[in-house]
Length: 200
Ligand code: FE
Image (cartoon, rainbow, N blue to C red; front, side, top):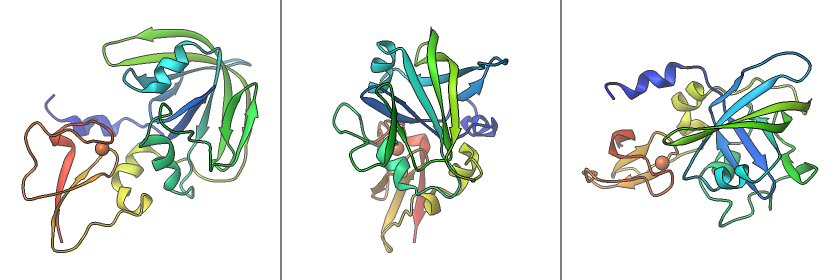
């Protein structure tokens, strides 16, 4: 791809996708239908455990991450797998028919899954909105805002005097003068081109 950064210009948000016993952070959410029960699509990486669980579920929820939400929520839901940890263990939540929904975000939509579309890397799940509720007044954070303010949002600190390579997707920090060409982020698995060098 010539310039992957152009993809950041597509307006996407920051959302927690949750279903029975799995949840993850997603950015590719779109409204794709109107009426009383609008349709919403959400794309989930195939290597993500939540993708597997979503195939075997009938309902799911999408919660909106706000500008004033704590960045630790991104770390809890985005940088670890529901296969290994219960992401809701220390998160205040409500539950609708077994689907846990974080109670500290801007609000949520609860959906019935009606279709799936597969591509090479992602599954696009389409749901019909059954209900939606707002928890607090806040502006939704866009993916672009997150990209531009990641250090602040995640409260990232790199050690001074060391050359650091910071993953632009998840914020993982690698220390070393050079990053190997075949390096993959141990947290989010993106390659070397997603790392930016920082010297302080
Ligand atoms: Fe990463």
